[in-house]
Picture 1 (cartoon, rainbow, N blue to C red):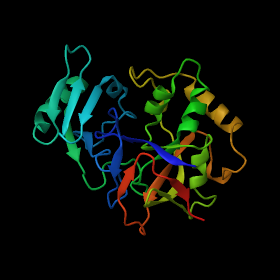
Picture 2: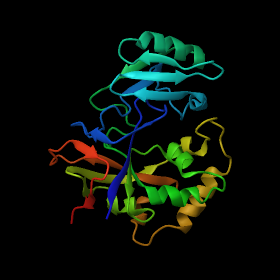
Picture 3: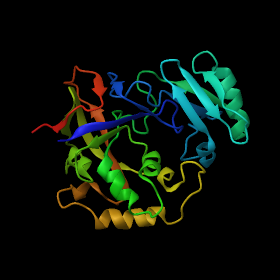
Length: 261
């Protein structure tokens, strides 16, 4: 039976994630604390992994209830701890020195900073999918692949690519499903960017990653998947929205996952 196996939140966009046992689903569909903050440059552009590979060199540990980040800067002797609400200017100054240009920390506690504001729900993938994709790259671990793909919720008890059942063959239709008592709408397979091609610790890009991924994704493509939603095969995980019909707002590890008939 499909069940919720992992919940991962990324409090600052493009920074390391934190695994939790439960999460609150906001009215917007976003998970509380997920991508709540984002770094922005002087032109208003978000400083993320797509634009700045250097961000992969930062190691961050979050204490969500304490509202702190323990930040390890390369070549620093020890981590620095900042309060995310009271010490934003200190954190901004530290990160501006690291990047070599001025950055500010912006906050959106209602929706966070999703890549697609029309799909503000959690991204969904299965543990079996991560395991299968990892097997395409000798020497890589499932945890490393998990950090490359950066999905929010991970489904256990299902075969690889089960999550591809969560979108329709037609772009104007959705698939209704629930996690525990929270209802979501599956929208589309997630188009991947340059980030998965990079080592999550060094930021070093692997030249053939995307080529191998596309070849293997096509070769292992299940017969039951809506191929019409794949104009290319560099897609993995599913983008979602919260259903307007959902009144529940809490996810818990072990929750049953079910597709509505």
